[in-house]
Image (tube, rainbow, N blue to C red; front, side):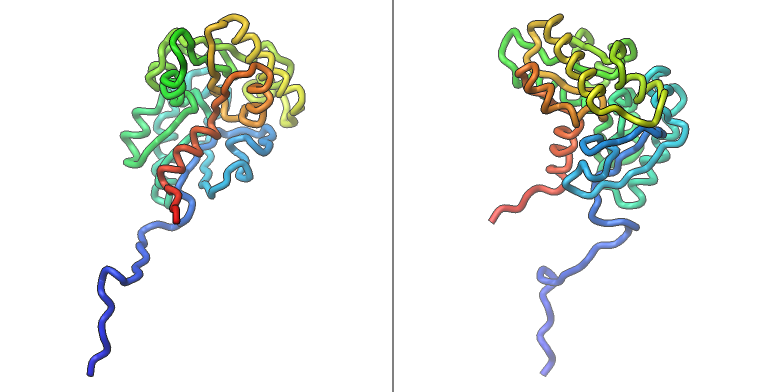
Length: 249
């Protein structure tokens, strides 16, 4: 008598076609040398799930933030496509200013793309009561243009405050004046920008942090201004939840 066959529906088939498995989120990194502490998007220990990193050569903070990422789109597209070929099922980036590339990257790679924490602006605005607005704390207010906001569906007159006048954050992360980061001073710069935002715009009812290096200071800022604070960590946690929904029971 022949042995009973296994029903196709019960067979355990592992699908191939990728080089790397188990890390569904690919992150495009700027080419930097500053310290990335836990909580920073570029520190692998920040994430409670595996991620794939790819440095985009030539994409310095200066070129992306201060020069509007001019000429870098092909490099980001190529790097994103490489991550997808390796195994990434979705793509993000380590700079909120790359919202400018949201549509182009999504069209080029064929997987979900979330370039910037600024994508949360319309979501957060929808949660607020009448008369309240979502505001932004960014590394560089002068560089955050209406085009960056419109690319994510946010109002071009969204209240914004930057850290340019601080003693540490902007100097290290954008100007690249040194590789070391004084964490206490960096936090103070973010807190001062957040307080200034709320003081200048009393209607602000929640804050989104543009910069992917700011999540280490989000809790302190929320406590200081007594408002909800969202950042790239909150966005990527949501992003990943759709890629790997939790199983119950």
